[in-house]
Amino acid sequence: NTMCPHPPPLPMENHRKLTMLTCEWCKRRFCSERADSKYCCDSHKTLACDKRRNEKRNKRHADEEYLRRWRIKQKEKEKLAAIAPTSPSKPPENNFNNQYYVDGLKEINEMLDKNKQEQKLRDEKYEFE
Image (cartoon, rainbow, N blue to C red):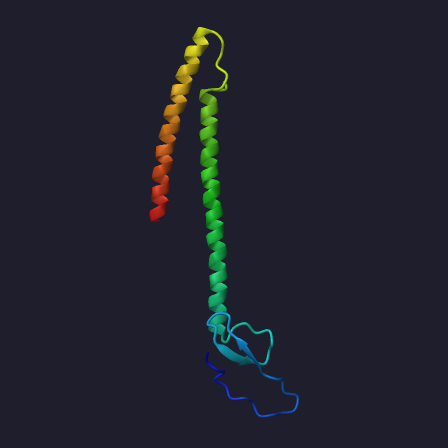
């Protein structure tokens, strides 16, 4: 630990007392007239502020990416609902509709496979950025 580089001031009338503190950026000891100082110099204060800003920006970008992926999933669900309006767990009763149902399921499965492959490619793309 490095001690304060400033010599203690000469006793003066109405002079504030100096306090030894630890810089939150570099962890070095420094002296200050203010007991609530957090940083030993202006540049460390600026670096800490920049770090906080970048953390907020990174969180915002992560939230935006989450929303983008959620919207893609919603669009895929809408497409699937348009292709097969009936529920896959309850096939229609007559034969003509059963064939329509089976064809619809095949189409849905093909689309799901295609979407999974596209999503995998998008995920790989974002890993390298």
